[in-house]
Length: 492
Image (cartoon, rainbow, N blue to C red; front, side):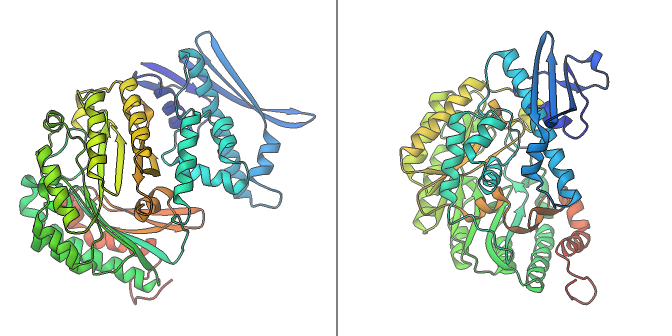
């Protein structure tokens, strides 16, 4: 157990996240500095040249001090004449940014090596990149000077920003529709999703579809009243293709839209049937995910996926034969999978030549069996896997086009989507960059209303049965999020 003290109250968890990059030990936040193994302090110092923000971090006999010209930095973030709220947020941002950098430099000195993402702990690094471009600071200076991010990761970010050019659009008149199906054939050992195995919920699926259809219709009505245009539709899960064809058709009939992009995350190859594909074609679906996660038979068994490697090839051929754009997912760091076995999976995916390949770093999330069993992947091996995937994919005609990070990811690495030129998923970019509002339907889904620099959210209930019993309440919450009046259908 490592005890940590900080005298700042608005970034304790993020400072702990920086420390966790270097240790698997539990970290406890304490109230007294003299009881801490690692202590962090900050203060504002006055001088003839203005205010200076000083951060100091101590770990045993080692200490790091960081001093920055506070007034100068504030002028850049909150120019003269801006609101008090803007000034308040700018000050909070600066204090958090340099506290994290101070802690990171202390850990880097103590352990003798840096981390690929430096002091950066956020989920969406590309959003920071766009902020840097708009402010005139530039990506290199922001990521290197302010967060100590490695050159390869800065290069990755710049490649993604370049690939998103012309696709990442901010359109207040657009909205995406997400539809969630929380059932799976089996629960993978790395999964923490709150849905469940179909056999446990078989008697509830029809009722769930009833609620889902009701919520989809309500979401469409909200969009109509607010004069919002549906840009993308994404049906995810869980594994949506656990629904049988009549059940799935009810969902597609409720949607009945012609968006720019229409995706079904089929996911598990063993659940995809020819009848499903014919149904998708009938209703205008354009993209289907076929997710191997691994092309190693032993790995599939270890992580509790019932499909075979042969299923991947068979169902992929079916999906491509039906004329869909295809995404494939792979995971780096699965239990007992060697680097060579992962390299083979990357080569196999490239040989099949889907339009998109997404490489995830294994994240040990609370609620997953692997987390419960205290599994830990070899960070150095996972780093090699991710590096290999990047080199092999970019040399095979695939470009990175979106990226996100997760807490508890092995080696503190990232998830990257790669695309052939012209096939980037608009929905994935919308979600990662948070440029488009989302009307989300289904248990554990989250609607977002993007309005300028602010994002408001409404989360549907995670538990399937509670979701169904309180469907009307959740529809009302969604209407409130998008400012739709309940009584007469007018717009507030």
